[in-house]
Amino acid sequence: MGQAPRALQPSLSERHFFGAELRRRRERADLSQARLGSMIRFSADLIRRVETADRFPSREFVEACDKALAADGALMRLLPLLEKTRNKEGEPSGGHAGVTKLLPAYSAQPSGKSEMVVRVPFQPGVLDRAALDWLNAPSGPLLSMHARLGSSDQVCDEDLFSAETALEMFRQLDHTHGAGRIHAQVQRYVEDELNRLLANSPASEAIGRRLYTLAAGFFELCGYQAVDTGAHGLAQRRYLRALRLTQAADDRLYGSYLLAVNIGHLALHCGHPEPALRMALTAVRGGESLATPAVKAGLHAVVARSHARLGREGECLSHLDIAERQLARSRPEDEPTWIRYFTSAYLADEMAHCFHDLGRPQQTQQHLGDAFAALSPTHVRRLAIDTALLASSLAVAGRIDEACVAAREAVDHAAKTASHRCLQRVVEVQADLEPYRCELEVRELGEYVRHQLPLAAV
Image (cartoon, rainbow, N blue to C red; front, side, top):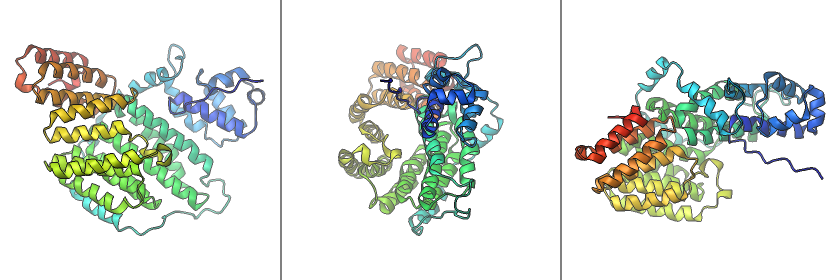
């Protein structure tokens, strides 16, 4: 009996994604590795190694597979995700090693234009009209169906499967590495592959809805990455485009999430709690009747965060209680894929931020402990932010030695990412420790930051 093929994890790296896509298309064509190898004049062993992410494919190999599997350029369009992962001195062994080789190259690109984008201001006054338009939007999808049925340029289920897999991969890489290292990849994919899909007509109304929801997911990710690189005005524009795409798809549930969790959080991040509260409450009003338990928990967590920032402890605690009860009812398999990250660890993180804003360090530390216990070690950016928050909470409580130890750990996490948010939190920790700047531990922490994370040095 033949050995079962190794299970693939497309979101692990670009190479795993390509290998999974090649295997899927080969099996769909009902071809063995040996048969495909004879068709393209490459060995079956090479095909096996590419499919299992043990080998980086050459351009010639990808071209031959694309032609033999009648992929119509779909495999070739993945080359931009692959071509810079090759080690100039030889192929890396696979997995995250290849990704690590790729990522610094993008952060080193000339940034003149991007610096101009970073200076585009966040405009809270725009949000109320966008929220009102969303709340009062007529039901029903706004789809382009002008292409004739069966046309070769129509968007089909297979196109969407590939793009959805790419989006999941990008989300995982973003969690691990931060936006500064992968935003160029995501932007290139949006400009090439996603825009190609949006330019064509969907094969059916169901595929059209799915396409626009997928596009909203990409622009949500682009917006989150803009926040993570300090470009708050750009983030606002991307989030609002994602919101409009959910209206085109008639996906009110995802729209409510974008309005509260993305746009509301952005307003909080930029120091505007009142607009954040209005966005979150509008999302609750317009989407809660459709919301699953995890989505309800996410919406009410942002309402609670906004009340905490405004110093309204009673209202904050009331909405945190709703969020806790709703998340306890949630079953991941019944939730939309875009909310499944919102686990007990993420709710604990939201609660910790609430109590920090309310000036209650003991409760902040308690909920951060819950977050750390459940948080995946691959979510390095979240670990950095939460560890920095722990350090700030300890500083507020006067536990300076412990605060400095936690701050060093936060610096270590942040140094593994390219995240403006991580840098900002490390700067905030140092500000919280400023009253104790003459203490030896605080002075040594400052030196450690200058050595390990110079961009966050104050």
